[in-house]
Length: 161
Image (cartoon, rainbow, N blue to C red):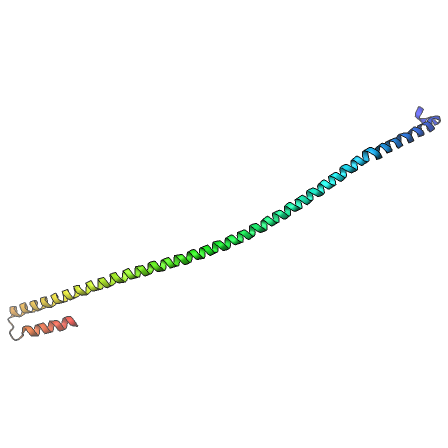
């Protein structure tokens, strides 16, 4: 085995040092800076994305705050509309009730007047009818001591009670 021969050790050590130094130089000059540059670019890109994400998060928070504010305003406006509608509805109902009450009272008064007129007609007919019946009864039984005036007065007293 030639690599274990002691006489070739200095040559092998020389070439080992040359190869290692060459590889170190190549690595240090070309590869490590590219890797470092890539890592720096990656870190800056990640930081940029984190900043963009934070900006989006802040924008989303602002939008949510605006949404909640507008929602609260809309709820207030809706509540005011509901209250306004309720007031208008109450006013409308009150007007219709008043209108109904006026019509109802007019009809009631008209009906009471008709009933009163009918009552007067019926009472006068009743008085005449009672008087006629009494006269007929008196004639049938042939009672002479009762006068028509007495009968009329009694019928009037009974009806007016």
